[in-house]
Every structure is written in structure tokens, then in C-alpha cells.
Amino acid sequence: MIDTKEELRFANAVYYLWRTIVTGFLRVLGTPSLLVVSAVLFLSALGAGTAFVLSAPRYMWGVDTMLLLLAFVPCTGLYLFLMGYMRGSWKMYRNFVRVGFVNAAGEAPLLIDKARKGNSLLLKFYSKGLTDIEWHDQITALQSALNLSIAEVRPGDDHRTVIVKAVAANANLGTLIPWADYLINREDDADFVLGRSLVGDVHINIDKQPMLLIGGSTGSGKTMLVLTLLVQAARRGSRVYIFDGKGLDYYGMKQYDAMIYDDYADFLCILEHIVTGMKERITRFKALEVHDIHGYRKAANDPTFSRIVVVVDECAEILDPTGRSKEEKEAIGKITACLNTIARMGRAVGVHLIISTQRPDANAVPGSIKSNLDVRICGKADPTLSTIILGDGRADELIPKYSQGRFVLADGAQDIIFQGFYHDRDRSVFG
Image (cartoon, rainbow, N blue to C red; front, top):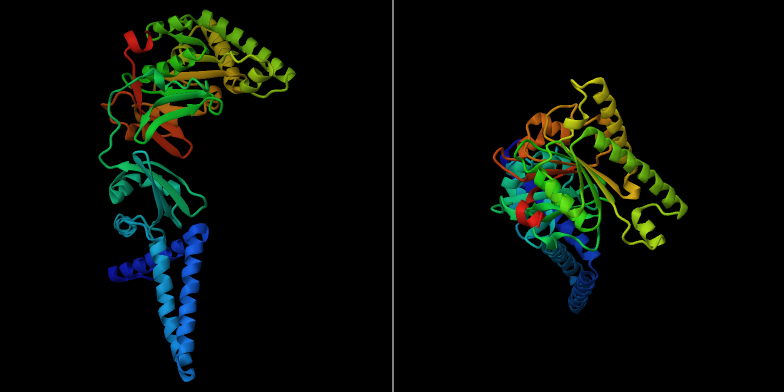
């Protein structure tokens, strides 16, 4: 048991020294060129030591051998320490200890590798007893310890390493990032750019994450983000269908032949048509023995076979049955069933769903649909709306109240904070 600060400092220094030597040993073993150089140095030292011992009188061989061993062990340790030492690692280690980021034994994470990638640093830590989840929970204190802004934390190659992606402490996202057409990936119509984080552009792949739930209070920039997605989809040949209860936010999409609805009956009619078409697609895919839209395009020799994107803007306006008449509730039930079918079955056949909401109400997004929306994005929001979108109130904590266009993308255990692109609706988006 460590009772004093001096004993704790000594124990941490010993642990740091030992782990750095072990890191150097592993680095030598894992790097062929270093292994060869180290072997040559070892054999040369062994040969020189043997020659020295043999050149001495026989009665001195035992003493000389002991002296050589006493010199060889610390020299080997020093060599391995130098091989494992990372510049700044001791300072980081001490700062982790100062902010209390240590395991049950009082040991802090140790930097074992680093590399620069663009404007960011990739830092690899030996983090025994401290998981990436615990890094996330104490990210504010860790940023202070490192004097860096942490953009990403993820598990390393094993259960005892953690990878941290960080940028300079004074880096910021900015508040106005103009959209540019070069951002559209013309080679892959499943790749969508959302915005820009501290370490670069943020993308999703709708082949892997085909259904989106986007939330944010009034003025959060939610509509602009949806437009960012729709412009990319439409310009790459996707068919776009939008329910916009106000009929004002997406009118410019008509130039891309997007279909825009503000009436229940009309929207229900097109949804039923899409569901029927989706089931026909499934039949065609089965006939050609393909399992996704890319396989169908290749097998049918039809590279222009289009995706379908369905958008429900402010879903509470059309899906919440509270206070509705019997006929309206029946229509809402049918619309919900259609959207649920799309959310469950659309991925493989290239049919995608984007639902947005600004209403902090648990009834805003039916659970049967919400459970199939695998991408969750939230702009500035109160704790209730954040909980509806992300599962807890972290958007309220991570996004400043005054910000517009700032979002949290929930990506597994990792939150990615990004700034959405700005469009001049009269020019950039609607030409």
C-alpha cells in the first residue's frame, strides 16, 4: 500500500521505466530492421566482451565476467529504454496522474507510439485497467492533461491499448463552412459527407448505415443538414421523396425532380407505391442471386439503377396520433406501417429513410421505426430531445446553446462532433 506522495511518485517512476523498457523490447522484436541492428550490436558487444575476458589472466576470468555482466545488464536496459521512449511521454504520464486518471493500482496510461496524420496526432497508449469508455467519461480532464483537443478515442489492437486522435488545443470547428460541389463523391453513391470535424470531413456510408434519425431544436441547422444529404443523393441520380408539412424548406429540390408532399393522403399513396416497388426489387434481386444494389447493377448491366431516398421532415406533424380524428389516425397507422417496412427492409435494395424531428416528445418518433434508424445525429437540443435521439442528454452538454449547424454523430461508443456545411439556398443548393 502506498502511503505517501513520495512513495507514489517513486512507484510511478519505476512503473514508467519498466513499461518503457518493455515497449522498447516489443518494438525491437516487431521491427525487422531494428531487430537486425540490435542483434548485430548484441553480438558485437558479446564478442568484444569475450575477447576482453580471454585476454586477461585466467585467474581474473571470473571477476571480469561478473564486471561485464554488471555493465551489460544496465546497458541493455538503457538501450531498450531508448528504443521505447516517446518524446513527451513522461510529461503526459505525470499529467495523467495529476488529474487522477489512474487505474486501481495508481498507474496512468503510458504513451507507446505516436504519428502525425494531416493536422491531427494519433497517440497510442498502454492503458492497463482503463478502457476507452473511461477515457470518454473523463475527456475534459484528459484534454487538460494533454493540452490537446481530443477528437476521437477508440480501442487499440488489444484490450490494453487505446488510440487517441487529437489536434492542437486552440483548434476549432468554425461556424461557417461553405458547401462546395467537389465534396460530392462521384465514384460511390453510398458515400455521404455530413460536415467537418476537428480532424477532417465526416462521412457515412448508407450501404452500411442506411437509415438516419436527425434531431435538433429550432435554429439548429437540421434542415440544412438534410439538404446536404439530399443534394448529394439527387446529383448522383437517386429518386427523392419528401414530406414537408410546411411546404417551404425543400421547394428548391424540385429542380432535381424531387417529389415534395404536404398532404397525408398524397404521401401515403406514394409510400404504398414505394413499398410495392421495394418488394418488386427484392424479387428481382433474388432472381439474379444478388444481395445488394451494387450486385444488381453489375448482374443486370444497369449502372444507373437508382436508389430511393424518403425524407420525413418534422415527423411529429405526420406520425403523432395525439388529438387526431379517427380517419387521420387510420392514415397515420398506414403511414407508420409503410415507414416501418422501409426501415426494416430497404437497405439491401437501395431504399433509404431520413427522419427528422425538433419536438422533445417521446411520441415524436414511433419506437418501431426508431429501432431501425441506425444513424443518430443531434444538433443543439434540450436534454429531452437529446435523449430521444441519442439515448441520453449529451447533445445538451456537448453543443453550445448559441451554435448553429453544430451536431453530434453517435457512432457506437464514439461521439463525433462536427460542423455542418452552409448552403446559400439561392445559389449553392438550388443553382
